[in-house]
Amino acid sequence: MSNPIGYPVFRTTDPVQALCVARQLVAVGDVRHAQVSVDIELRTVPEVLRIREALPDAWFRKEDVEDWTRDPSDPTGLHVGVHAPGLSSDPGFLSSHLPLWASMLDQPLGSIEEEFAALVGPNIGEIYWSSLEWPDVPDREIYREANNARVALLFNSRSLEFDDRAGDHTVLVHVRRAHRDGSDLRHACWLAKQIGQALIGPSQE
Image (cartoon, rainbow, N blue to C red; front, top):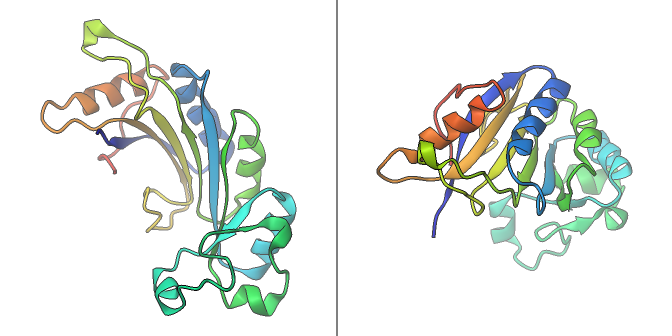
């Protein structure tokens, strides 16, 4: 079993430019089986209602382990997720469960990225491309990689854990984690170079 490791390769305050660079990176790989997922943190009732209307196929959930412990019966359904049409619009209900997260998982490539980038605004969010395949470059001792080939675009955060809020957006490339030989760093550097970029920070897992 291998694990992916992410390296930041680009950062900007312009979400359109960030999306452009992320798509360039995605295109380095084989995208025949690629899928894209989006996720966004919503801290106010107006933002929840705005995203529910804009993304009627989204699912809304809570990321509150303490709440799950307090009431494992999950009467709201927000522990496992509520489909947008079934989410209450009552401000009192919504405000008592903030922050909420909204996501759309495993969507077709090119189906949601531009719309989501335009919707994120000041919220922390992510576009995440998976099921890619990085190419074989044997003369560089870089080998075909599918299981861990991913690209992430973080909005208003620089951490895959979403534990910091930032005023910019970061693109990360994911490769297979190497425990000893440093091949993950070499692989990430090569991928960044293919789109005229370079690593701009330490790895994240």
